[in-house]
Image 1 (cartoon, one colour):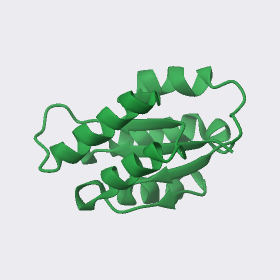
Image 2 (spheres, rainbow, N blue to C red):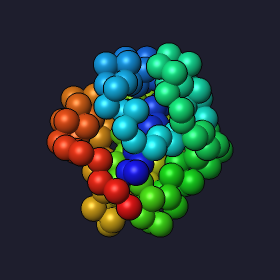
Image 3 (cartoon, rainbow, N blue to C red):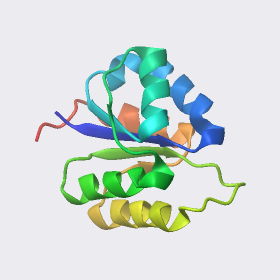
Length: 126
């Protein structure tokens, strides 16, 4: 089963939860991984099973980048707060660079994530 990674900066967690509630049935067709608090918020709001990693600033973004490199992640939904500085910006840039190198879809806002989730067709199997 294909895997989607979910990440949201603190100012975007509500948007991620709303996105997940809107697309709950579709997301249920994928394995889901997420950084710590994003995964917990989405799981509580939707009942979806989500494997949570570390929180973003504590290495979660890097863990997801490693999963992308290993070919385990087929799309990343990372709702970014562009108006704030992030002390772990190098980790964020690494994740984005890895997605581009590996040609993995990276949605940084709900509108793009909506198009990506609709464009998947049937989830690819590994």
